[in-house]
Structure formats: C-alpha cells, structure tokens
Image (tube, rainbow over all chains, first blue to last red; front, side):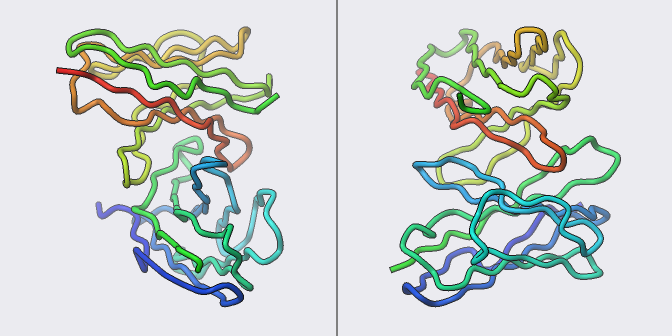
Length: 113
Length: 109
C-alpha cells in the first residue's frame, strides 16, 4: 500500500499570507490527523477528521482550520501567517480497527518570513 | 506537570549494547501507548504500540508498560549505528496522540 502523501513538501510564505496544505491518507484509512512540530514545542496535535467531520481539536487558535473530503483526503489551512507558524506540519492517517495507531506522512515544511 | 515526559538525552551507547528509553505520562486513564522513531529531517515512523501491562517484543525492540507506575519504556537490543535517531513516546487521548519531546539516541561504532 502506498503511504500517506503530503503536498507541497516545502513552502515559503510571508507574514499575513495564508496557506493550504494537502494530505492523502493510506488507502482505506478514514481518519486523518494533523500535527505541528517545532523545535521548542515538539509535536503537537492540531485536529482530527473522520468521515468529513472534525472529531477532535487541539489547543490552537482559530487561524488553523481543516477539512476532509468524501475520499478521505484532507486539507489544513492557516490564515494570517505569523513567524511562529514556521514548522513541520505532519499528517497522519489511521484505520478504525487499529486502536489509534497513526502512520505519518513525510510532512510539509513551512517557513514564514 | 507535562502530559508525557521523556529525558531529552542524548543517550549514548556503543554498538551492540542495549539502549533503554523511558517515558512517563500523567493521565492515569490512558489506554494506548506508542513509540516512534524520527531521523533528522524525516517524519516519525511507528516502531511499537502497546496497550496492556507487561512486555511486547518485536525483533530487537521490546516495549514495556506499567500502568500503575504510569511508565512506558523501549529497549533496543544489539543497538546499531542506524538506530541513532530521536525516539518519541506517544500516549493516545481519544483520537489524538500526545507526544513527549523525544529522546535522542546516539549509537557509536
């Protein structure tokens, strides 16, 4: 099976802009989670989608949003970018029968200037 | 108190030795536990999952869980230089994973 894919892999934006990141889960996986990884804060949970519904949300401001499509692909959006949003954004997918076991994609590295 | 705590390291071991990585968690109701390996510049890769008290072995890796002590560990036997990476402990909370900051392991040849 192909793994989780994420596009784009690298992105450079300036403060105030917005960005959309895309994630395609492993075939058959219906749950998609998003995480932010920074050197200071480590890996932090953003939100999780299942069957096009957000089931869980981490402690991030409303500038961070996401959605899931009927084919389980997901996008996350960050509006009004801040310097502190520079991070590796990771998408993970899981199958309902695997007790929250999550498999990560390669990530999108976002640099905000 | 942080939800998931790990020693940041670095933990240095010689090739062929046993590396022991530790993790404690604060939520006594946690039911699922995971170890991920992350090479520099790469994304986390799942090594082990464990749900019940005791040991779970997979090749050179053994995960140990003690829910009473709220403690999870990962043992790597016959450590290889290719095991040099950051090891992340994660605890399931609903559909989210809560991660520790990771322990950096360095295996010298």
